[in-house]
Image: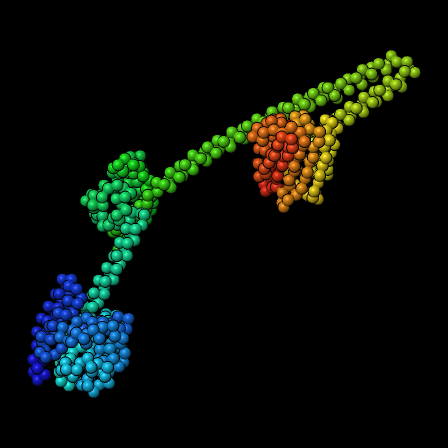
Length: 546
């Protein structure tokens, strides 16, 4: 048909549109669909050339133009749109039809004269192709060999063709978005460590819509086996867990309450721990019709938890054993204290009192001139008994410790040990005295007493030194001697109390350090916090050994 003929029959236009839509419906690529649309348009108007350009990111891209020069199509591909860029660039930019009656005279076409030289193209009008959202996604253009303007029927015809182009372009965009979405989902599902599954709930049956490839790694079965038999996953559940899991899924999966841990027995005999969760999916009527879920292999975590539980149980057993040993040692220490006290009372105080009683009974038979020496002897015996009683009192619980503090009590202790055992004991207080927690006060005093008595009894030392200082929020006590060294690995080498001291001091978050070398004597360092949080009764910690 030439420019003088009547318009194309509506039936022919409709048939052309149907042919193009069939191509689109069968899934033909976009370039094939647009090329078919351009050929149908050119066949209906002999002598007319057609181009379909795509608009992305404010640039034109070649879509179809079967009769246009290759050089022209290549030049247009990637061209930025603008108000003075030909008919198509301006149409895409302005969002409206642009008509160039004579491209040799139209200012928009000056940059394309060289490309179209000798191609018999003089007129062009372009229609914007709009998506359903109203955005411009392309242009549909018609080119003529002579200067002309579109007639009414041609405007209707180009609009119809632009609508078909819009359907094809938008369908391709939707398909691309779907493919990209599917690819993102595939990448996510196939690269996470959890098994992702999606089921569809039907009456009396369940259909697996998707299972991620990780299923094969975790369960040891093929994904296809689950597609073929959706209930096969439950056959691998450990017999002791199976009914519990099935009941939980039946009652909770569609309500978002399915969150269970269970064991499976893989075909290769391995047992794995699984953490399975389900999430209901509702339709527009709020009816659950699908269930999505995640199955995570938590075997390593479970084994770690079991190992931790075993270790905690072992630690608890050891702790109880240590506590029992400490309690036993405390009981033994108490018994030694009682025995020591009994010996002191019997050999010292009781003998003095008995002798004084004998002297008193002899008073009646004494001559008056002999009475005075007897009374003087009785007085001396009573004074010795009183001194002995005071000494025992100080050894059990010296009042000076609680009345004046740690440093004065240590000073008294040094003098008492020196006087009782004939060993020189010096004290060195390097810092000013500081208030101590009652537990720490009692324990450290008992420990120093134990160490000094051990030195006097077992070290064969001639001199001992007690050094006290207060580093930071702690107190440090060092007991040194010049006696015989011992192996620190055998802390019972100087009496039975050193191990007890360590146990009790560690219970207060303190520590003991032993440095013993032949020819250099021994230094035992006691370090403890000056104050405690949540202190216990000092009587529980202040048991002494002798």
